[in-house]
Amino acid sequence: MHQESPIVRRKSKQIMVGNVPVGGDAPIAVQSMTNTETCDVQATVGQIKSLQDAGADIVRVSVPSMDAAEAFREIRRQVTIPLVADIHFDYKIALKVAEYGVDCLRINPGNIGREDRVAAVISAARDNGIPIRIGVNAGSLEKDLQKKYGEPTPAALVESAMRHIDILDRHNFDQYKISLKASDVFMAVGAYRLIAKQIEQPLHLGITEAGGFRSGAVKSAIGLGMLLMDGIGDTIRVSLAADPVQEIKVGFDILKSLRLRSKGVNFIACPSCSRQNFDVIKTMNELEMRLEDVQTPIDVAVIGCVVNGPGEAREADVGLTGGSPNNLIYLGGKPDHKADNVGLVDHFEQVIRAQVKTRQAALDALIVKA
Image 1 (cartoon, one colour):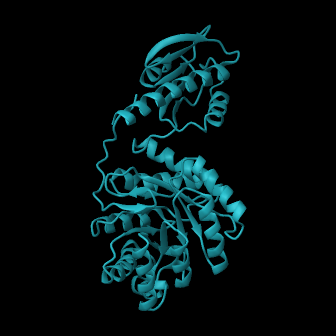
Image 2 (cartoon, helix red, strand yellow):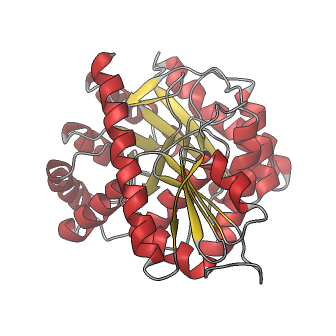
């Protein structure tokens, strides 16, 4: 059954990225970034919609040229999810996408150039109600800071961020969020912990260039988990050299494990052993694949034997525990009916979907009542 997270989140200023609140008491947003060629509108729109279907709250799109800005205009027309434009160096691109309906600008004011150019971008953001994300990265730290610190360090990342923040402060612009990313877990965690004490703006978390699917997911879970346990973080992105859809799935899995977000099926499953009365691994692989479309939060236990099965099943919304001669299915913490191994996955999927439908109807009723 669902429990509240014991984590006390850092108090932060709330900003709006499109219709998604970021910071304050808003749910921690999960985002990813397209890896298609932005000028290929069809491919980019297709990927954005796949990310949205996976549960993404926000999607970032790289806009490196004026041609890409024109493509972005058409992309914006075809999708509904909030979009962040990733822009470097050319301030005119930022002005153009601000005109075309972008929901957030990811820039570093320091690499936009002269003060008048930065002022123009800030003015466009203010006039169009667009927040800015300052993105500091250990791999692109200013040369003078590299010389001062000898190498990228948490303090160096924070000093870089504060330079950019000072620029926005001089123009009385406070609608921004910050990220301080590094591929090293200790560096990223140290930097976020430092800046969390110095500013009240929302923080976007990420361990950048984390690696491939498996290694990157592990590194991100450790780094983001440490910060989230501290109550730090208002949006997250899991950076993987993999399908961006996997970034969304891993992001939600991290938040679900800390009880910070509830979306979709939360599986409790045993690793299987010789006591199992059905093939747990095959069953889990099938269920995860079949139930990817479920967005309603629900806890599902899949345990292969009667040693730990009944206890775990009683704590879940829906439970399956192995038994001899028949397996036992629990609903709402109580034994409901037996099921044999023939057609077990098909039957259990139907049971879960029926419970999802009932749960969603109850949630909808609460919303209407409120």
